[in-house]
Amino acid sequence: MQTEPEQALFADLDLPDALLRAIKQLGYESPSPIQGKSIPVLLEGKNIIGQAQTGTGKTAAFALPILANIDLKQTAPQALVLAPTRELAIQVAEAFQVYARHMKNFHVLPIYGGADMRGQLRALKRGAHVVVGTPGRILDHLGRKSLKLNELKTVVLDEADEMLRMGFIDDVDTILAETPETRQTALFSATMPDRIRQIAKRHVESPVHIKIKAKTAVVDTIEQAFLIINQGEKLDALTRYLDTEATEGVIIFVRTREATVTVAEKLNARGYIAAAINGDISQPIREKTIARLKKSQLDILVATDVAARGIDVERISHVINFDIPYDSEAYVHRIGRTGRAGRSGKALLFVQPRERRLLGIIEKDTKQKLNSWEKPSAKQMAEQRKTKLAEVLAAKLETNLPSVYHQWVEELCQQLELPAEQLAAALLSEQFTLEQLLPPPETKKPRREKNLRDGRGDRNERGSRTERGERKPRKPRREDNIALEKYRIEAGHNHGVQPKDIVGALANEAGIDREYIGRIELNDDHSLVGLPPGMPKDIFQLLQKVRVKGQPMRLSRTQAGNSDEPEPTKQAASPSTRKKPDAKTRSRKPKATEKDRPRRNKPAAKKKPQS
Image 1 (spheres, rainbow, N blue to C red):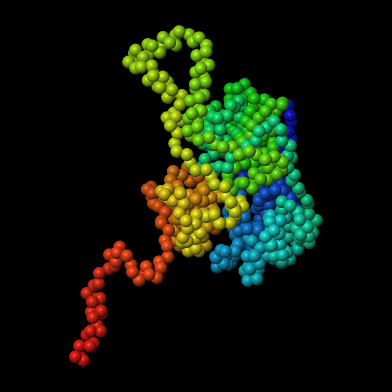
Image 2 (image 1 turned 180 degrees about the vertical axis):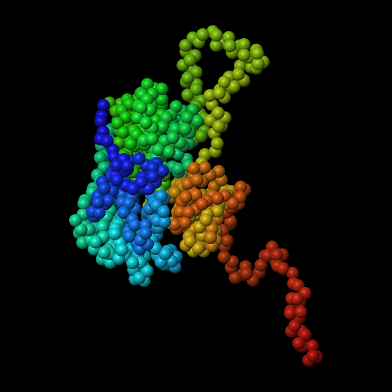
């Protein structure tokens, strides 16, 4: 049996109980490689230079040590995180807030360009323990003397190479020169160009170098594929894959312990034999579950990375990555559960549209191009079930069935006074639901997001909008005839929210295709947005907590009916059109009142005395 090294747990990293409780509630069991190596060093107060790819969990690698050392009684900024884009700044600030959920009166403030300066000034005056910002806006506040860095304990440069690429590195140099010499510094970058090395040499004193290199050996006997899919459609795609593939044993990998239970329960409800395995399950039960898998008493295991380590079961024919892993090494470990002992195996990777960059990293590190898996249509699924049933029945009929079966059929037909066809249909309904034989209409595939990198930018939003939230004229699309439901979001003009902020949050966090996000109406303290009907419960619950400009959405449905029919495009009126309004316009013209009539007759009244 192949042995693997024991993986550390968050509980082993000497973090405060408040942070461990938050991590446990999030469902994470063990730190990623960059987290496991960075957290202990930062807790000791040392400087680090961390080199790791995007998506490896760098945010928690610096956020958890900062929170562990924060002094909640001090209101001046104690940590400054520099990020290249406002999207990343918001994401990092939200991560701090989530990890600090059990730290009373903790405040984190995202600062970036394009947001209301007055709101940021008020927030800075109130005080924030951690400031996360883009270099340009941080310099603005330093120039205004509204941001004071004299009490800083830690400075983090996140995605330093991206800041270099975007032309911010000189601003970073200026900001670092304004920070105390006694500060702790952490620099994270996927690559180390010469300019980044110069910055590190000048501003990061005696650093500990941490480099995470993925082990990318993939067995040639494993056939790998991926599917671009939205979060809410994963379960449907999973069941279609299981139905179309000739599987033996299957391991499905998810990120959290809660997800193992949820996915296993949903699969069991659909007729599969599945079980969950995670860190909360005791070792004896884990061993029994794996023994059941080996003896073919169990077909599907839904597991986290830690719980599945060391599993060596020959009958594992397929590995499904329900959630994309943090890095290439984790991906290689996962799919290594199949294709063992010279046998062939298959691996499928689900990728949300905003995770395409992680897919590229995996392909680059493993030096293998993954094939795109085409999800079969509902009609194809129904035909395939019919074909499989025919094969099973044909195999049965090849053997001489005992006469008692024929006798029972005859007796039941006589007893129920039904022909054999109706009896066979009733028996068939026991095996297949009506939905399996008459599938629902297909949902639209998630489009490939061109010109977008990890959700950054807003070129592909649903129509370009002005700052007041009004849509500019755009070409009508095929999807414009879909009736949408109106939802309320508890964030508006007063919070510095713009339509693109709402679109980005819905697309990136909930996986809702931008083409299905309807008109956004911004008000002072809330906003209204049209979304597709029938939102899944888990997505609805997720959107209660998602933040827009630091403000929780607290999404709620305003009314059950269709309430956001897209408006027709409005064309600018030509001069001739304005001079000659059409009949419909004339008919809507209000009638003159008694008050109006004397006003129109005034000129005639003045001429009367002269006659």
